[in-house]
Length: 168
Image 1 (cartoon, helix red, strand yellow):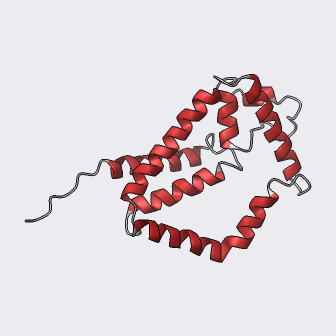
Image 2: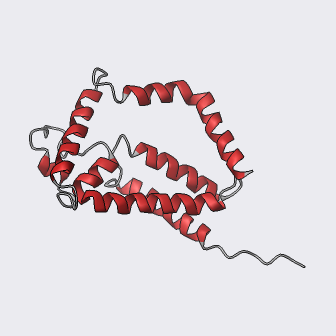
Image 3: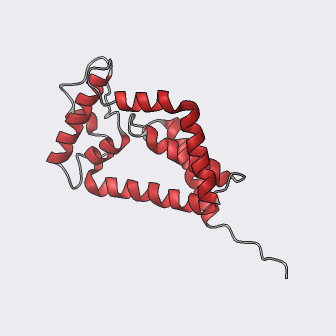
């Protein structure tokens, strides 16, 4: 039942927003589309830096120092992808830890989520937060960190919720 409700929610999103969302998603990887050329160049550079420092990365907050040739008036630069930025700065170990946090939070919320709970809202927020992370580095924004912390707190509360005893 829960899976059906979530599936209906996703289908509804794509019915109302499907074409614009899918078109924008696909165009994000097309270098001939406006600002995408710069973003794709940044992603390629981030992958290159990750390959040079795959285990522990270049250090937290040091991604911009690897991008001297790309820095312009838009300084400081970021990877425009949370996952690439984490991989570049913290290496595979940091990326696995980040993915572990996301997956364990998702699972905790999914177990408790139904359309009438706060857990469902937090689950939806986590899904969109994770998708947004493919196109922007969201971990350094104070607003996004507050939102993510709230989602984690709700997930922690939902996963540790004590079930009420059922009357006999």
